[in-house]
Image 1: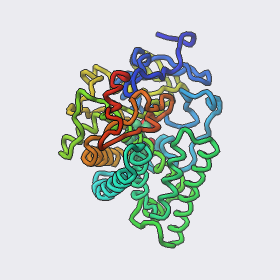
Image 2: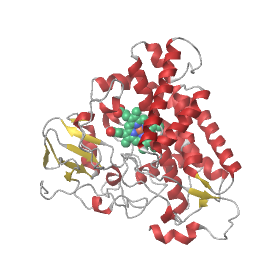
Image 3: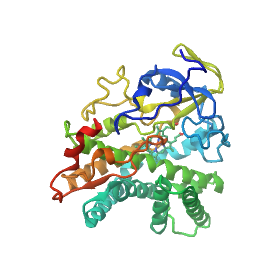
Image 4: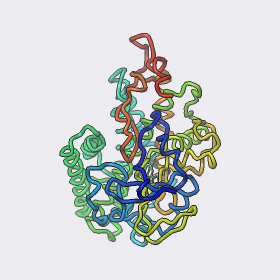
Length: 417
Ligand code: HEM
């Protein structure tokens, strides 16, 4: 067992763009972790331990109790408690109240209603990408706009405001944006959401009355601050993870020469493939965290009240005790039970929507551009190893007749494995 003197910081170096940090995988299922602010906490890497912690009400997601496992810059700032409406950082009963209000907007029926819109936005993005010609950056031309437009549709953001939200979201998610530009982008989205809520309150028309925001205003139970924050939470959570999965999922499918299976239009096949991609890539790498509210004994160790645990989902979902041959990307395997959407009361609210988006968008992408390939060697695709949501910043892709007479994938397959 490690103690305060031997605890190591979180290992973040990945051996390949798709495999979790090797050093992190060598840890036992629950081990001591040195946080950048000096906190001595834990990291869970085993599937069973991770699932048990996520299901245990003695662990909290309250922001002011959580320590940051990476990033020295702001690690010493103690975060303020979540403002009204920021329910992912609340425990029951506050969390339950918001979750109840929102759940019907994210159920299978609502997602089925949204399917035509998902197809429409996917086709439009592909049309624009094809019109722009090969090569293109799949992140900006496909992976970012599709989920951004879908979440706007679900919220009921009118068409004239979508462009501003989409543009600001792209700035927010671009790691090359300066902090000033990122803050500006957040302010601009907040302003748009606040404006919408004002129009809905005044019955001024514009915002879609079938949208989530209109319904939430109509309940009369929520303040403007709560409504604005809910809108912001949903825009943020509904967008970055899905766009990251779309881009990283495409990347792995373009490099996986040995198993060239692609998601297909056959619904069962595509569903399985998406589930396996979610397990294999598990992009929420460091953001799922909990702090113990009491001393909790787990896996023969005691997590003391006040100690933070990072749930390393990418490692837990590669636990050989739960998934045989976990490092094989096997699109035909039943990957159900994976933890890529978390587990317990905070399990991803948008999981049905995310699955539908991934299934529809990936199927359409490979149908439309069957010869899609990387436009640069795989080793040159920039990855976000230290970011809470793992992914790629850019994914240069090409299709049609290769101008240089060779495929980057052929040239560099060896570099990533
Ligand atoms: C592939 C895409 C996605 C992945 C991998 C993903 C993953 C996750 C994970 C792991 C959690 C649990 C966090 C925790 O326990 O601390 C979560 C929570 C959440 N997700 Fe997603 N998510 C995705 C897409 C979406 C979408 C499309 C939405 C739509 C708005 C969404 C909304 C949320 C919300 C609101 C929460 C917080 C739930 C709560 O605290 O009760 N997610 N997501």
